[in-house]
Image (tube, rainbow, N blue to C red; front, side):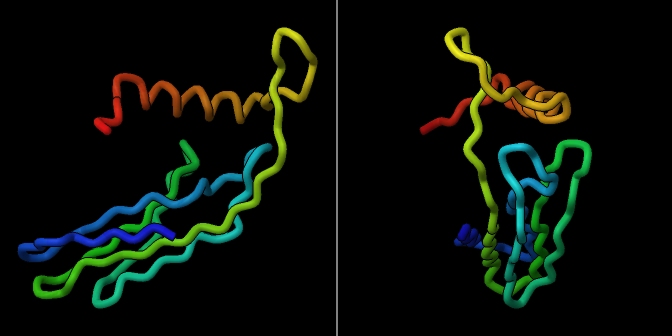
Length: 112
């Protein structure tokens, strides 16, 4: 479960929380993304081009902006071709998806 809380909100707030992949891959299948935003209005937004899903929650002024998100997924053992052994490789669609994610993350570093 992921819990997001804006500690010192001023006025109305919008909170975005990422969910599990919305597209089945050869290594992961999402069963459900559930969320709760007490006092606010929340919806799940899907981006089919990169298989991402987000909860978008909006809170009026005076309401504590708190969002909880739970994703249930199933994974499977998966291996890739290495120089020493032959094994299952990524499908062309999974490979393209992984390549897009890698390109989008280039230049970003976790400060911690």
